[in-house]
Length: 257
Figure 1 (cartoon, helix red, strand yellow):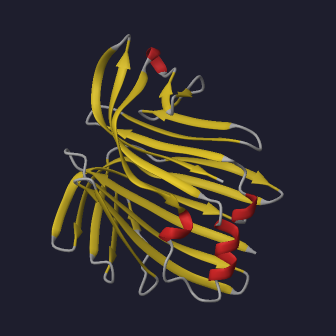
Figure 2: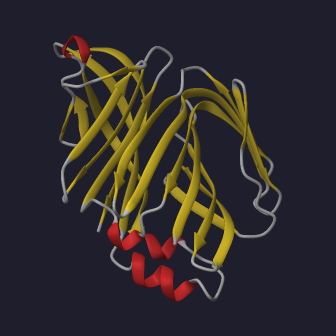
Figure 3: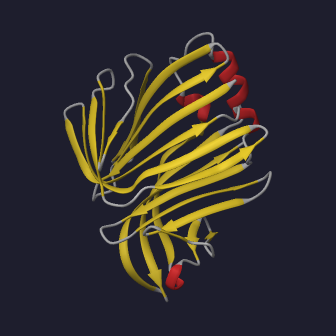
């Protein structure tokens, strides 16, 4: 039996600095453990850290999410600025993928070491019972655009049945498409324009996993050996008829197997 429950929380400042936080629980056969990690991008430099000690899961209370990790020296709060969306992305013989975007847009404040980081943020959680070797995609694309006026979230994959989900300002976009990796054919003829992309992480997933329980390492290594992630932050603009009506920041990634 395999089960992963994962939280993802982020914040991007007005200048494009990025802080991404993960917390989760993995159960695989008789082995179970909690984990947490932090990924920071600032001034072209990425640093990250992981912990499997004293891991607490985020707390969701009404319109706020809070989370802290003593070992990682991080504590944050996200205040809701958009309504939750939920989808079962997969329900098949190999298992389930249940996805909840708790806060498509939030006002976020995070203390990381001695630094206070504030900006627009995003919170989601994922429950997965499909073993990594049976994931239903060859390439997965995910992203979110946030500004003071609008937000866009998208998930899509190719291979083993192409799928795409996309929302803008709380409305699903049934005609939406990804063109050059960015949302297009949105309501009102809008599209998202990405520019000045900066690499936050571009490496094999295994390289970012350290400190795993010894009994889990061979199993994880075998399942994730070919998994690669390319995560970027970009300036983003919502465009209608070649006129930009909105400006913000987008975090987006491509995961390939």
